[in-house]
Length: 316
Image (cartoon, rainbow, N blue to C red; front, side):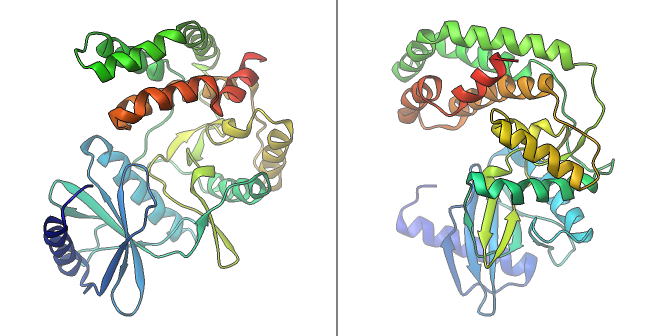
């Protein structure tokens, strides 16, 4: 959010007024937290303690954001401390309204997002603890093995083709160069969608981006940001490292250690590899600044980390 100094001062003043009226917090200091993909985030001090403030300005994302708050509250009530602590408003609501945005307040956690091969054991253990607590009725979506991500991407691509913007034509030229591989992945997604479509058993409360939200601090590990929580198979959390045999075995062994009778299924892993391939393409087209799009997409399609996942899925 780019603002000049006077506009920022006015913005922060109004934001602090909301925090005081909704939470009875008198702000003594605020600093950008830089923890979030969609949201604006701040570290807030009130003189006695600090908080994590998350503000979602994107209307299309509000429903997911609010659903994630319900998940965090549920997990805390079940004794899970690694998912963060939501601070309720004076009216016992999970969020407050700020202009056209919604905001939520959490207890501050000192830590860094550190993801390595060595952190996967702790990550999978936390996911398994959440899977055990899966219950119906939470206000989150249920996964389906559809072609929606690819369909959405092709619609975006077609819209760019008919655009008069020079920036859009640059993006189209990049996508056109990789049309063969994109079409191949779309066909593979369709294949595994058919194989998995009627298999709706063994769905759990999944995170969706555990590695990207794995935090370490003060000798503890955390799994934060539950905005993308969904009832889905464990492959939704496992696919990103599923191209490595050691990671697949570690994931399955961890499930077993928590008495979860499930082993990763190749068809589901392949589905998620192709599904997420198109999901991230859609993200780039929707959220990246224009000057970043064409280069970012070319790097993703040519040298990106996604390629090893697609090659693994191609082998299944």
